[in-house]
Structure formats: C-alpha cells, structure tokens
Length: 264
Image (cartoon, rainbow, N blue to C red):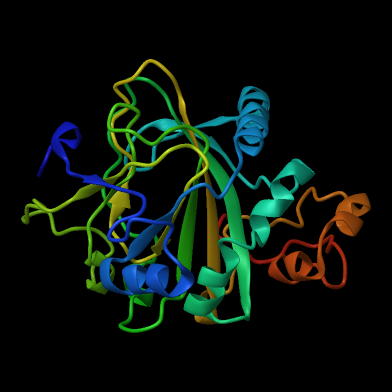
C-alpha cells in the first residue's frame, strides 16, 4: 500500500489538455471509474458555499468515524437554498443522466470536512457487495471541491478500474500499488462510479478541507440515503426547478411522513 504522500497525481484534465467534453468524460468514467471536471463553480460560489459549510458545521456538525476521522454534515438540501444549484447543475447532471438514465434521485447531499492531522480514510466503494453487478452503475457520486484538493490537504485517493471488481472493499491480502490522488483546484468536481474504491487522504496541512458529496441513485437502489423531505420548508418549493423537484421526489410537494432512507 502506498503512503498518500507518494501517490501519483491525477491532473483534472487528463488525458486531454482542455476541459473534457461529455463523451470524453463518460469514456474516462467507463474506463477508469472517474473523471474530474474543472472550474464548475466560480470563485464566488466556492467562497459562499464554504462559508455556509463552516457555519453549519459549528451549528450541527458531527464526528464521522467511517473508516477514518472527519467532521460530517448530513442532508444539506433542507438546510439552505444555496445548495439547490448543486442538485441539477448543467455542467454535471448530463453525466449522471447518461450513466444512470433519467429516472434517478439525488439520494443525499452531505459534506465532509477533513481537519489537519485527520488520517487517511480506508479505501471503499459506495455500493454494497450485494448490489455490485457488471454493466451500468446504479449509483454515481460527485465530489464538489470547496478547497484546493492537494496532496497536503489530503485529496481523495482512487483505484482506477476498481469499479469492475465484485468486492465492496479491497481484499485485505492484496497491495494496491496503482492508486492515484485526485488533485484539482477549488471549484472542480470529481465524478465517479459508486463502485469505485476511493477514500480521503491524510490532511497534513494547516487548514480544513471542505467537500460536498452529491450521491445519485437509480434502479433497485432508488432509496434516499438522507431524506430531503425531512425538515424541508414548504415555502422553499417555489425556488426549485421542475427537474430539481423530480430529483428530490417533490413533484407533489413535501411529504410529512418519512420516505424510506438508509438511516432507518
């Protein structure tokens, strides 16, 4: 296993020299399991979302111990309309729709804040072993970088091609010498097949690393990870586009009873 300090870097525009078009990005996801789209968010958008995350983390942040240590914010859609543009961003949603088809949901929008000295997160896939099948994915994750993703800040590590493996996590007895670290400036978005083995790196820097995680599902896994109806103010419905309402299953408004979600 490589130490994250020595992992090769994944440039945000490899293998092309410019922003990948849709077909190139889809080819990279099919082949490697991921792609990086640079400059999706403007400097001002990054600044506003990061400041909002800092405030919410102080108010309602939780410690996450899933295969590592970090601060966590769950279910951001009911927290502030500033997150609404993430739901169906025109630079990102076309990738998701091509991979999953049009009948999909935003299963969750959460945040992960990796603090200085937080250790590397264990490598894992987001799709359970029982749902991992060859072919079209049933889940795609997006990572919205609100700080520069660098080796020092603990950029996400990925194992190219691991989305084709049947195991949810790497076999303990096997080394993984060909990991990459997804390095990109703030405002970039990492898109990956939910079956891909990935994990946050060690933050050896002096500041927190903030990221948003938009998690989309379809097919037999069309279940919210975090139910966006819980706590969503009905007065905000008019701020949602028709597509956003479909992705949140809010075409008929906010349901008072709980949808099925992964938190029980």
